[in-house]
Amino acid sequence: MFITQACCMITPMTDDKAINPVINELRRDIDAIDDDILQLLHKRAELARQVGVNKNGAFYRPEREAVVIKRMQKNSPGILPKRSVRAIYREIMSACLNLEQTLNIYYPEHGCADCQMAAWLHFGLGPTYHPCASLEEVVKQVEMQPSSYAVLPLSAETASVLSILQHSELKICGEVGLDARRHYLVLGDYETEPSGDDCTYVLLPDSRLNLTQPEQLPGNGIIREAGLTTSVETGMRLLPLNGHIKQAELQQAITILQNQYQDLRVLGSCPQNLTEF
Image (cartoon, rainbow, N blue to C red; front, side):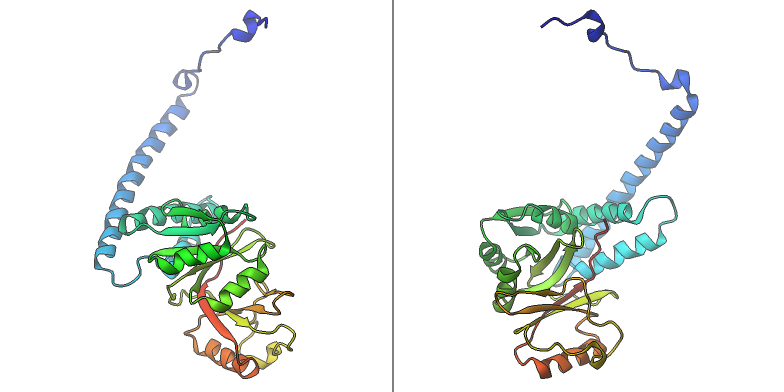
């Protein structure tokens, strides 16, 4: 192939200092800030490690992470969008948690191309990720191993996931929404504490029964539309309620539902989805 000399000419890099000294000065300021950020990150990591040494119980606390992220988004004073603040602190906390204990995250490899993305968005890059051949294998691994969590695709595998939720002792401790159509649940053996903005999932055994009217339940808007899922195959309905299971108002709502659905199962509470797109 004939290549002309003109095509092979390489343009030398421009000397920013010679053309625009302002850029060079700004970059020196950025470098200095980067050095400060790195020192502060190491200081934060050491404090997180000390928390882990003195912590009793679960190392991974999704409610604590939710509080931190929302606080930083609220207090962000500059031009960074909230989704960027969330992504930055997601990775900071993921790296710090990894110093305390490495989490193992399991997700189905086939039939759910976005499951790994949902897992990354929720847990960051700190954990070790394990793709599995089936939903049942995902749950089996998490039930056998401590410090492990499952990410299941609610939208893509509704009937299978609801069946798993009906029989497994694992608790819902997180949720991830990539968009309005793609919803994922995080399962583990950890029961979260209230974060101030939570959702509690309950499983109704028969979606053909008339759902209790919202006005019969305490509070306004206690039934959340996002995540409400019905399986035609199994006849089950997954019902998300605004609030935490430890809150008196939500306990009252669940008691009312239990009077109507004797086989109702409370699947766990978790912070409301933090992913923003």
